[in-house]
Length: 237
Image 1 (cartoon, helix red, strand yellow):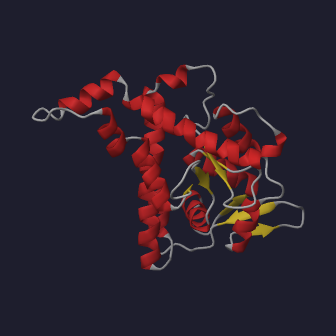
Image 2 (cartoon, one colour; image 1 turned 90 degrees about the horizontal axis):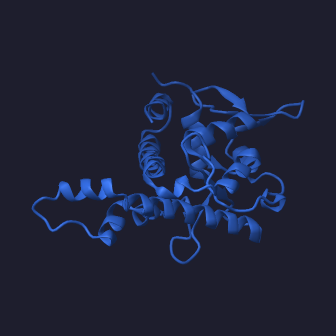
Image 3 (spheres, one colour; image 1 turned 180 degrees about the vertical axis):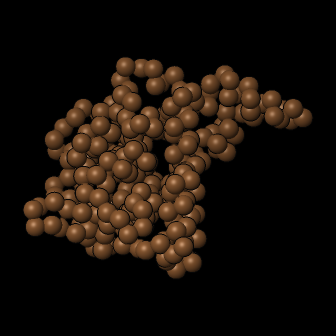
């Protein structure tokens, strides 16, 4: 988190955009921490159906806003449902309940519904919708979706100013930093972690991620077929 903040503070960008990116960074850190800590306290994690996901212990499966298949939508919805289940289960951990009620000595305690609304998956869902990365804002079957704002933030937070990496390297970086899987090997891992049978039809046709990075000016195609993702901003300080 500190490294990501440092990169956002160093780049030469408009001050208003910097504030927006810092806000995005902080909210995403809360969501990441909620998932990583919930994995530690949820009994669901001990079940054989769960693989470890990313190095953070979880995986976020992102799908396009439009142009997805029925299988891709199902996997994305199931992934977020698993996240919700783990957060909810972690809040039922006896040690967490004991701690929450111990800091409310003069009150009657916290009911499970109140706990969920303030600190649980309802809160997680609300944060994701505010960032625009959980869609739809209202209605059933919410899922993680890719947005231009998210991709811009990811490039600027995982790459040092004025540096680059391969496209495959970029996908690995966002998976290790945030547990975000969009396509390729990382997507397969996220599908398995979500307890969904792996199916080749769940991989996107073409690359929505590449197109969005190219449109944002972050992707360069080299003559040998290798793609490079670059943070084009220079250091301000």
